[in-house]
Amino acid sequence: MPLLTVVILAAGIFPRREEVLRLLDEADLIACCDSAAATLVKTGREPGLIVGDLDSIPAELRMRYADRMVQCSGQDDNDLTKTFHEVIKLKPSVIHILGATGLREDHTLGNISLLADYLHEIETAGLDCTIDMVSDYGRFLAATGTKTFKSIPGQEISIFAFDNSLQMKAEGLEYPLDGVTFNSLWKATLNKATGSEFTLSPNCNAPYLVYLCNPCL
Image 1: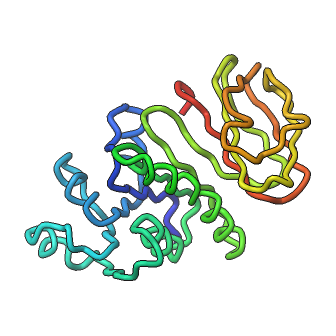
Image 2 (image 1 turned 60 degrees about the vertical axis):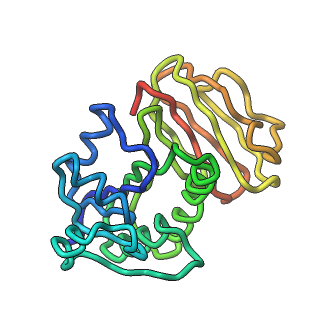
């Protein structure tokens, strides 16, 4: 049977909020990106999978978790992508990515943009799997096509896309998206939900990212 829920833990800022830590504690498997395993173990939690070049793993942990390590030394992908590729082999239904932001802004931007690529790979493989990226401050969701998202009134919402031919209509947001050209990251940021859900309807199947600010994780 496939795993229901997998958390991928990257080596950025480790979460502190109870709601985010609960994702770790309720996961069927925690897959760590290389050195994130050492951080996880310090919190008393166990990694189920460790992926990367493994050169930053302490010797004691390499011995303890030798049965669950996957060494990937190529430079074409970062450790987050290497871990994602190992995780989708397990065909989970939910993937939460934690610890992917903070510390270095270039890593943060790169990791967030990878969500769109991961969604494309999931859809191409025909997997029934949702994926998001969660921090103490909010959640990024990757989507294609018309989608309805849960929200709370007044919740801050930002939308990002990487295809400037994409146009979008919105229902349930304070500010309309008609006429917005997604040719810069700020173009559809700092919106607000007006109710308990909102719907985004793009004109094509290009992937886009939705950021939902706390408190609605």
